[in-house]
Structure formats: structure tokens, C-alpha cells
Image (cartoon, rainbow, N blue to C red; front, side, top):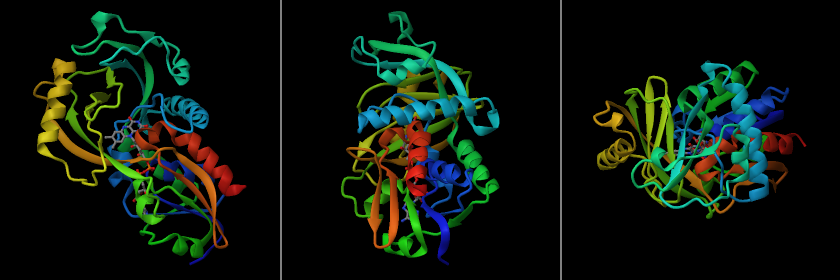
Length: 318
Ligand SMILES: Cc1cc2nc3c(=O)[nH]c(=O)nc-3n(C[C@H](O)[C@H](O)[C@H](O)COP(=O)(O)OP(=O)(O)OC[C@H]3O[C@@H](n4cnc5c(N)ncnc54)[C@H](O)[C@@H]3O)c2cc1C
């Protein structure tokens, strides 16, 4: 049924839900169509941590992560959201030099690690408090907020932009790596990531490896469980967890924190980061419809989510 004066959002990952919540909570009628349940999306497989995003376009990315940081700090006041503030380390196997990314200045307690605070194999790093996000709970929180604001969520894949444009005059495309097929954007590529969820053996600080490698270590505690990561394999579309990859993640994480040796595995997860040379938040005209794109957030879609959602919602309303 055509939507009179309402917005159709395609996608119910963190980008789609944040945009839909932003629109619905300011009085715009919104329908979401998604191929997957929010808990089955790539967003649900993320660790996830708010952190600096070294993506393009750099000036807009800085604004988006800054907006998102403040939102996550507010959300952390209510544990039911799945957002919480945690102290921990971000470290690299190379010298990070003296320059910190500008968004790191947002962290009030950020300081350099002393050499004795770094695990074996790491040569520099920082300590500080950041928002950590327990993604399945957080996506539930966003879905509940969306529905409470009158939004409608349909499990219904969209086969083409033409189909979407027939349904609504304003469409927001938040399809993540699905944009490769839906709008035929050849610049969107999967960067496959596997994570392992284990019972928390007593870890109360996060640890995240900084760098561009294929096997970055990540240890993100969320109360009773810890999300361990990860891998980053370009152009791999497989969403099946691999046992050998899980073993490698467990081994690397236990080297960083021996408490993790023999940790009880609860779940293995795979997500496809929507890699792209630049994040795409912009308007395209398609027939008589306005299409607002909000995709291509790579490994930082959670950290960028509120900033991009705010801008995408303004473009949709504008
Ligand atoms: C292992 C791992 C760890 C990560 N850790 C972090 C982290 O710590 N911090 C961080 O900021 N980011 C992290 N990321 C990246 C982050 O998960 C992504 O950038 C983000 O989830 C992308 O969100 P999205 O909503 O754009 O895409 P998705 O979550 O993939 O959602 C896309 C949505 O579009 C729908 N869709 C697609 N095509 C169609 C169609 N044709 N019709 C209808 N619906 C469609 C899908 O069903 C889905 O609902 C991580 C990613 C991985 C894999």
C-alpha cells in the first residue's frame, strides 16, 4: 500500500533503526522493511564499541562520531538500553606516535599506557572510558522505541529501488552491505568478521587492537558475557561461522588476558561490515521519489549511527 507522507526505511540494522527512531520520535510516520530480524543483522554481530572512526569523508565523520558519542553517554544512564561505559585499553603492535585522533579528545580520562600495561606484542596504546554497546539488547531497545513512537516494522525484502519508490515518495536506504545488490553500488564490499561470545570469567575492562590487520583482537565485556574478536576478511560473503577461526580468536584473546583460557563458548557470530571508500549519506532522485542513502559505514557503523541518522532524517524531512 502506498505510504502517504510517510517515510520508508529499508533496513533494520543500527543505521536503519537509528534513522527510523529519529524520524518517528519527531512525528514522522515511518515504515521499516527489512530482509532480516534486527538480531540477525550484521549490527547484531558487532562487539561493539564507540571509538574513533578513520573513515572518509573525514570532516563529516568527525561530526557524526561526536554526535553519537554524546548520545551513547546519555543512553548509558539506563542499563536496559544495553549501552554502558567501560574503562580499558586500545593498543597497537606499532608505535602510534604522539597524535591522537581528534574524537579521542572527547574521552575525559584518556591517557597513554605505560609499557607495563601493554600485553606481549603490543608497543603503544591508550587507556580510557568509552561507551560499549551490547548489540542484541541495544537493537531490541531501538526496536521498542521505534514501535512505541508508532513505527511499523515489516519483515519484507525490497527487490529494487523502483519498488520502494512506488511505495513511498521518501525512502531511506540503510541496507549496509545489501546496497551492493539493491542499488548496484559496486563500491560496497563485504568485510567479513567473526566474533565469539563467551561466559564472562571475571573480565571488567575492554581491550581493543588498533590497526588494519585481518585478525584484530577485541575483548568487550557486557556483564555476564564477553564478546571476543575478531577477523576482517575483504570480499568474503560467507556468513557461516568457522570452527578454526573461533579457535584462533580464543587463542589470541587468551594471550591478551589469560583469564580467557578455557572460557566457555556461548555463541559464534558472523557479520559483513559494509566496506566502502567513503560513507554515503546523501540524496538521490529516483523517478518522482527522494532516496536518502545512509550506508557504507565499514567497521564503524555503531560509532557513526546517531550522527548519520540525524543527518539522514534531516535530508528525508527536508
Ligand atoms: C565482527 C564485527 C565487529 C564490529 N565491531 C564494531 C564496533 O565495535 N564498533 C562499530 O562502530 N562498528 C562495528 N562493526 C561494524 C558495524 O557492525 C557495521 O558498520 C554496522 O552494523 C552496519 O550497520 P547497517 O545498519 O548499515 O547494516 P546491517 O546491520 O547489515 O543492516 C542492514 C539491514 O538492511 C537489510 N537489507 C539489506 N538489503 C535489503 C533489501 N533488499 N530489502 C530489505 N532489507 C534489506 C538487512 O536485512 C538489515 O536489516 C563491527 C562489525 C563486525 C562484523
